[in-house]
Length: 574
Image (cartoon, rainbow, N blue to C red; front, side, top):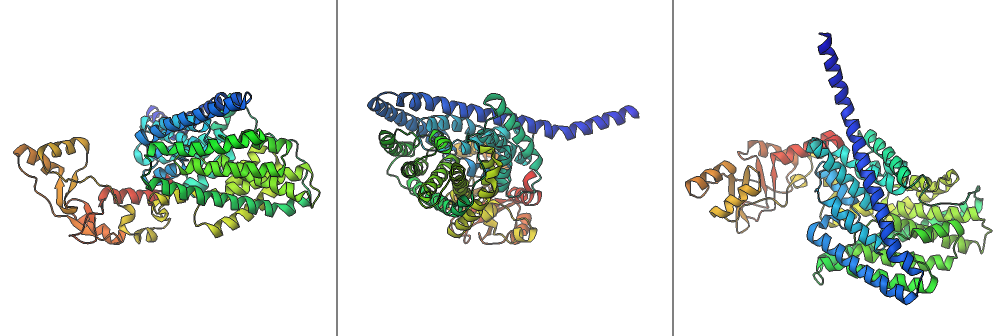
C-alpha cells in the first residue's frame, strides 16, 4: 500500500514538473536560436559593409550594391517560393497563430525566416532583428512541444515561451520581453501563461549572458540627474518621435498594401526594389557624412549618438534617410522587424530636440541623453502601443534607473497622440490588411459576447471542396485530406455534402457518390443560432452563403465550433 502511494506521489510530482521542464527546453532552444541569429547578422554585416566601408569609396559603393542586389534576390526567392508567411516582422503571424491555431505553425517557417532574415538584415536592408527573433523562437518552441507529445490544443504556452525567450535574448531585456508578450501577443497581464513566459525570459537572459555578455544593447556614459530643462523639453521630443512613428506606420503599411496587390512585379522581385532604394539613400548619406546608419540595424550610429552626442542637422539627415529606407524595405516585403528602426527614429528625434533646444536652454549631457532615449521609447510606444514594454526595454537596454521618470512622461505623451491618430497598432493593422478582423481573431472574455458574434468569425473561408467527381480526382482527395465530409460544388454553388465513407463506397462500386443535403446559414447568423444547426446537421457542417443558390463563401464544422469554444473559455492554455 505504501509502495503504491509512493509511486502515485512520484507520478504526481512528475506530472507537475513536466511543464516546467518543457518550458526550460522551449526557452533554451529559442534563446540559442536568437543568439545565433544575432551573431550571424553581425558577421554578415561586418563582412559586407563595415570592413569594405573603410577602404575606397567607389569600391565600397559597387561592392555594397552587388551585396544588396544578391541578398535581396535570394531572400525574395526564398520567401515567395517556400514561405510567404516568413516575410515582414513575424510578430503578427505569431499573434495570429496563437489565437487561431493554438500556437501551431509550420515546421519550415523558422528555418526560412532565419536564413532570409540574416541575409536581408546583414545584407543591408533597413530592418530590425527582434520581430524575426520572436517568430523563430515561437515557432521552434511550438514544434518542439509537438515533438514532446504536447497536443495541438496545448501549444500556446510553448509558443509564447519561445517568443519571450527569443526577445529576451535579442535585446538582453527579460522584463521587457515578458511585458511585450503579455501586452501584445496574449493581451492579458494576468495570463495563466505568465509563469512560462517568466521562466523562458530568464533562460533567454542567461543564454545571451553566457554567449555574448551581460552588457546592455546600448552603452551609455554615467548619467547624472537630469535638470528641469530636460523634463520641460521631453513632451516636445516625445510628440515629435510619436508623430514620426505614426508616419512610418502609415507609409510602410500603405506601401505594403499596394505592393502586394499590384502585379507590376513578381513577388520574389519586390524586396530588391526596397534594397535598391535603401542602397541609394544609404550610400549617398555615407558619402556625405561617413555614417552607415541607414543600412541594416543602424546600432553603431545610434550608439555613437548616445555615447558622444550628435549634431542635430546630422541627426535630422540620418532620421530622414533611415525613415525612407525602412519604409521601402518593409513595404516591399523585406524580411525583418520594426523595433530597431523605430528606436533609431526616436533617438534621432530626441537628438534634434536637444540640439535645437540648446540654443534656448542650457542643456547638459544628461539632459541630451534623456531626450534621446525618451524619443526612442516614445516612437516605439506609438507604433507598438505597448507603453510598459517601451519603458522597460529602454530601461533594461541602458541600465540607468534615473531615466524612468522621463520615460514615463514620454509614454504618456506618445500614447495620447497614437491613440488619437491611429485605430490600432502596427501589428494589428498588418493582420487587418490580410483580411483578419481583430475582434474575430481574439475571442472576447465573456460568453454572451462570444455567442453574439457572427458565425463567420469562426468559419473556414478556404474549405476543401469537390469540384471534380472523377475517380482519379476523388482518390487523390481522400489521400490528401483526412476530413470526413466534403462539400460538392458545381459552378460555385453547393450541391450537397459527400461523406468520406460514401465516397469510398462509390469508388469501390464505380458509381457517383450520393450526396447528403447541406445545411445553409447566412454569414451574419450568430454563433448561438448556428449551434443548433450544427448539432442537428447529419454532417456536422454548415455552409455559409447568402442563399442556397448563391456561391459558397465558407464552411463551419462542429470541430470549428468546439475549437473556438475551447479558445474562448480556456484562454491561452487552450
